[in-house]
Image (cartoon, rainbow, N blue to C red):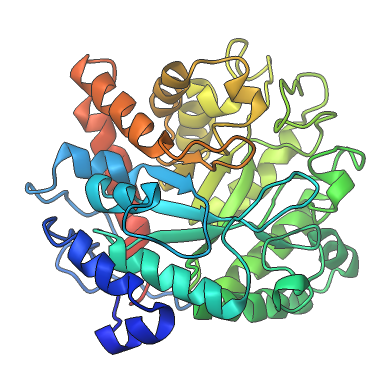
Length: 404
C-alpha cells in the first residue's frame, strides 16, 4: 500500500479510497521489495533511483500474482468506482501497471484519465490504494506532440525531442526532464514511457519523424540527449523507458495501423543508443517496436521475435531488465495474430510486460482475458512457470528501485 493516511486519501479523492481499502481487504497485499530489503543490495546510485541486484522470488508468491504483474492496462475514467473493471484487475489479478491517456478529439477517445492536475493526483492515489502490489503508473510524456499532460488540462507547455536535439544542449535537455519529472512525481506517475531513442533516418516517418519524436538522425546525439533525459527523470525518482526497439525511425508507415516492414531501410546504427545506454546502466525498461525486419527475423515482427528480443537485446546487447511490449492492440499485431497467439509469442520472445492500452479499441475485460490466456498457456505447458518467474523477478527488481 502507498504511504497515504486515511485522512490524506479522503482529501485527495473522497470515498473512493475507503472503498479501495474495503474492496481489496480479503486479498493479502504483496509488497514490492525495497532497495533496503534483505533481498536487494544497493549500489552507489548515479541518481535518486536506487539500483538493486537480483532478488529471489519468495515461495509464497503465487503463479497468479506473478502473471498479474506482467500486465500493463489502459482504462477509462477520471476516477475509480469499486466495481470498475480496472479495480477488479487490481484487486483480483494483482495488476502490475497501468497507462494513463488523455482525451483526443481527433481519434474520438472519450473519457480517458486526465482532466486536471488535482484530478490526476487523486486518480493515481486511488489506483495505488486498490493495488495489491505497488503499481507502476505510466504515461507517454515525451514532449511536443506526444504529451498527455497537455496545456488544456492545466499543465505547462512542452517541447518535442526534436527541438532539444536541434538545440544540442544536454544541460537544457536534462533541466527540462528534471522539471517534467517533478510534475510526474507529484502526480504519482513513476514510470515515463520515454525517451524515444529512435534514430530519425526518415524525417517523414508518420509515427516518429513527422511528429518530431526523435532527437536526431545522428545516434550519438540521440544517445547524449536520452542520457540527459534519463538523468533528469531519475533525479525526481521517476523511471524511464527506451523505445522502440530495435528502431522505428526508418519506417515509412505506422505500426498503429498495420504491417510495417523496415527490411530495406533499417540500419544497424539504430542499435547504438541502446548499446550505450545499457552499458551505462541507464536502461530502466525497454519497449519493443512492432516493426518487421526480414534480415533480423524472417518470420515475426520484433515484439514477437525471440531472435530479436532474446537474441539481440538480451544476449548480444546484454540487457536483463524489463522488456515491455508496445500496445498489443495496435494494428501491426492485432490484424495479423490472434490474441492468444500474440501473447504466447511475445512471452516466448522475452517480453516481460504486455501493454494492452485499450486505446483504439476499448475492451474492459481485456485484463481478465489476458490473465486467463497466460494462465492457460502455463497449464498447457506452452509457457513454463520458470519463464513467468523470470519476468516477475525483473519487474520486481524494477519496482524496488523506486523510493517510497
